[in-house]
Length: 303
Image (tube, rainbow, N blue to C red; front, side):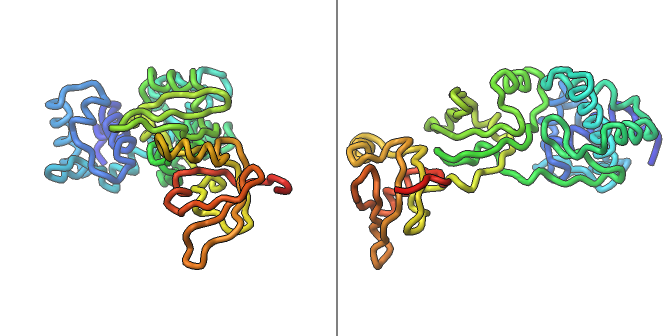
């Protein structure tokens, strides 16, 4: 590989493609230019250079993607950066929202010898402070096994795995609201017309736009599900009640409110309706109605 392929500018472009397209999907050149703060003309010229070096491949009307050589080089850069992030956050105790930018200034000047010594000193970490995987010495990387926060249903709970956004102001916004890897959140409400999500984190409610929510990878908690999915004899706590107007009022009149415990009594021979036990009363709901009620299973003692 030519030496100029290892220039700081080239490394930044390759790393940006890996971050935006997760190393696989074609990325529009306009998105690359926006992320790097350059003109689209400059980004296009660089992509032509990288294409001649067999580091990227262009797909008409879709964008550019890394070739195997380009991906390995990008992952080597990402390895150096994320190791420095671990050092800056865990040993120098610098702000979580700042270590990405600070590590960017160190990654290009770090030799392979220093990189591997840093890896050993840190105890061979596999994740950076933002929850993203650190490529190994051969450039291989295991993707985050989660789903975007934006894909959660109302009432569903999840644990934050990783934050894939790198803009300092965005990371600062998330840090101030404790939306960090390891935290457990629940979707309380989804505004119509692609509006923001309202999240519950402890005692706090946090509004988050869908674009940003899509950059946060989460692990849905299996204990959260629609009431319609419970089996006979199974108990759960109601965490969210959907529906509007008369339907929601009917639920409340029947004792179906957030925080109450519900048990499945029996299912009709044809599967609908289902009989439930709530607040000392037996009631029947169609599966369609029960599907609007989110519950969380757990140890609830006797009911």
